[in-house]
Amino acid sequence: MPTVLFLCTGNSCRSQMAEAIVNARYPEWRAYSAGVKPAGYVHEMAIEALNEIGITHSGTSKHINDLPTRDFDLVVTVCDSAAEACPVWPGKAGRRVHRGFADPAKAEGTRQERKQVFRQVRSEMLEVIPKLLEG
Image (cartoon, rainbow, N blue to C red; front, side):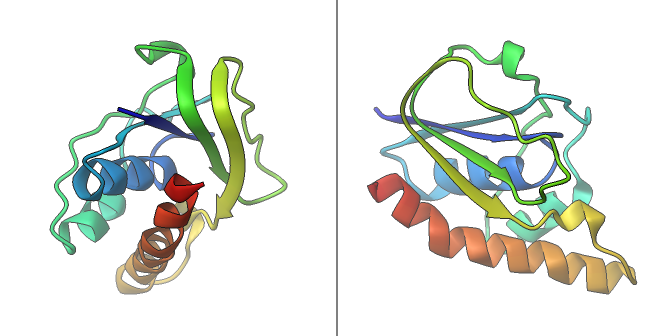
């Protein structure tokens, strides 16, 4: 079974959503996520955005050193902002791809407005992830 790792800085939103989408919708793949500076939690709006499309995710924010392996068929970095310290994978990767997504945790406004940003990122991931997995 091929494996994919989604990397970002905090491992609380984007990489968590990508991991959950792959594990729920692409059973031929096994997805993981991690960060270089884990936030220590998964953002509640990321969980809510996934729940809205029938995906239950109970992931935890993890450091790259907490992963069960360093060898992946695909490693995807998801940090979009140049201001972020987007990690580089030190392990073995069959293919490395950078595909940035806006950080929904930085959204401002009312709760509903912020939640809409999570939905937008989720929708973009639903379009992009199959293309990443296909190579």
